[in-house]
Length: 115
Ligand code: HEC
Image (cartoon, rainbow, N blue to C red; front, side):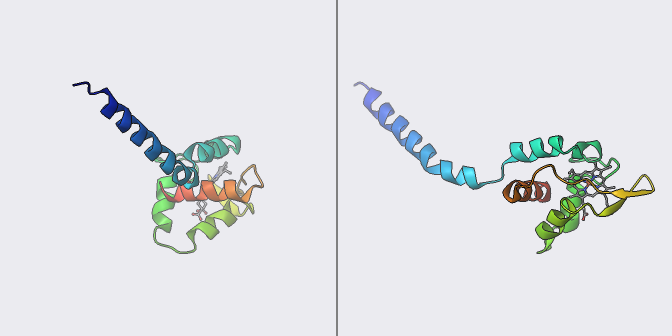
């Protein structure tokens, strides 16, 4: 018996599954875009995902806001309105993200909150 026809059918099945899943993946968090925006905005000078630098680690931020309904709004404001923060004991304006695209900013905030 030639097993090939069966394998072909399985391959088509796997392919159509992948195609069905694609729209979901596109709506999910875009980690690459989030990290690219952090880099472009110089956030990594003061923040890392899992260790404290001049600013808290993003894991720490995610833990602080865990379960808070207004977390996304709070962080969105934090990274777009240059609030005063203490860096090394000196008060200065916090950096803002280098984009005006709300979807891009929301993606970054959600990425930070899911660390
Ligand atoms: C000069 C250093 C510095 C840079 C650059 C910087 N941050 Fe911060 N960031 C801080 C400090 C310090 C805090 C802690 C502020 C506080 O808790 O009062 C902070 C806090 C935060 C928080 C937590 C806010 C909260 O409400 O707990 C987030 C989120 C954040 N930064 C994101 C960013 C992003 C995104 C960028 C890039 C656009 C960035 N930071 C660039 C120093 C920096």
